[in-house]
Picture 1 (cartoon, rainbow, N blue to C red):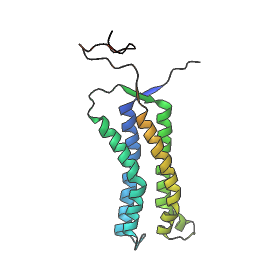
Picture 2 (picture 1 turned 90 degrees about the vertical axis):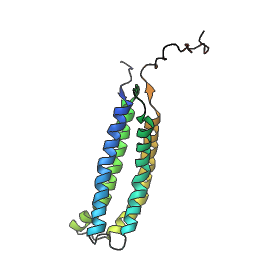
Picture 3 (picture 1 turned 45 degrees about the horizontal axis):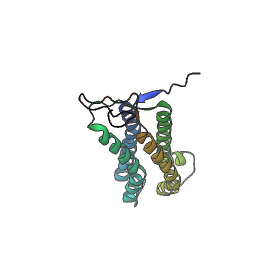
Picture 4 (picture 1 turned 180 degrees about the vertical axis):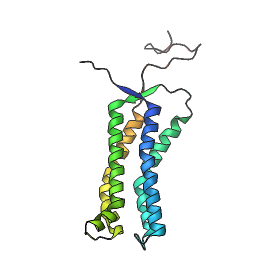
Length: 170
């Protein structure tokens, strides 16, 4: 069995995770915005709904943007990440986004099934569960964004002394 580690270029992996996160996050944002502005679904809790969303989405969003910005100035980036670690991070992001969507659309689902519950109370009851998932996702993304490595050692610019295993360019 071959023990070769499958890798993905870091930048491509980061952009893919950012798309996986931000496309549904913005969709949920606009759904909640429309529900609070044009519908009585969250009557009396409009500000609370946006604070709920911000607390559950903003920390992960800033982590992703921070990692992208930190690497934006690099012209050539030969760093890679473990493909399995990327898949785990994608799964965690997808699961969290799915949980957010289920929570946001739960009032309509509960109404359709005859289970009447106030939309705001559904959001507040789901919050502890979502916070647990958010902790897992933040840890996973932090690990993912910090575990990049060079597929092969970077080459030193011409004229730079070799600082190999001896350390002093001997």
